[in-house]
Amino acid sequence: KITRRESQREIIVMSRTVLLLLVISVCSLVGCVAEPDIIQHSRAKRLTAFAKPASPSQPPIVGKGKECKSDRECEVIPYTTCTIDVRDQRRRCICKDGNPPANGQCQNRPRERRSYLPSGYRHPETGLREACRSDAECLEGAECKINPNATTTAAKRQPVCL
Image 1 (cartoon, helix red, strand yellow):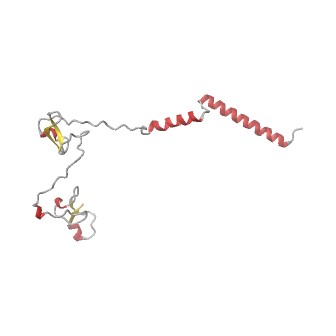
Image 2 (cartoon, rainbow, N blue to C red):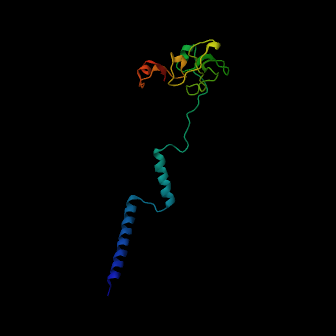
Image 3 (spheres, rainbow, N blue to C red):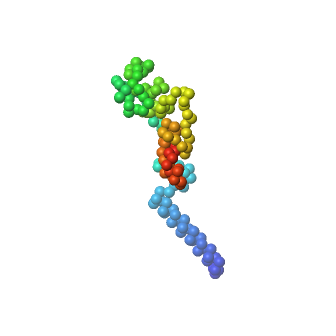
C-alpha cells in the first residue's frame, strides 16, 4: 500500500520533473545556453550595444588653419586673423595666440576689453546684482539691466549687473 505521504512525495517529484522538462523544451526552442560565461558575455554585448563604446574615440584634431587671403574669410572662426603660418609660409586663419584653430575653434581665447579708460581712471568691475550705469562696468558676460525680480519701486528703476 502507498501511504498518503508517499503519494505527496511522488506528486512533488513528478511536478519537478515536468517543470524541468518544460524548461528544457523551452530552452531548446529559444536557444538557452547553460554555460554562465557565455550568458554573461552575451548580456555584456546587449548592454553595450546601446551605450557608449568601451573606448570612446575623440574627434581628430585638425592641425592646420583654413587658407585665406583676407581677414574677412577668417570671420567665421572667432578670434582668428589671416596671417602667414610660420610652418609652411602660407596665409591661414591663425588664432590670436599664434596657434592654428583645432576643429574650428581657438583653444586660448583672449579677454576682450569693453571700453578704454586711462590706467589711473579704471574702476573695478561691478559684481552681480550691484548697481551699474553701463555694460562695461559689469563682469565679463554680464549686462547692465533693470532687475525684473525687484520688489521695491526704487529698485525697479535702478539697473544692476545681471
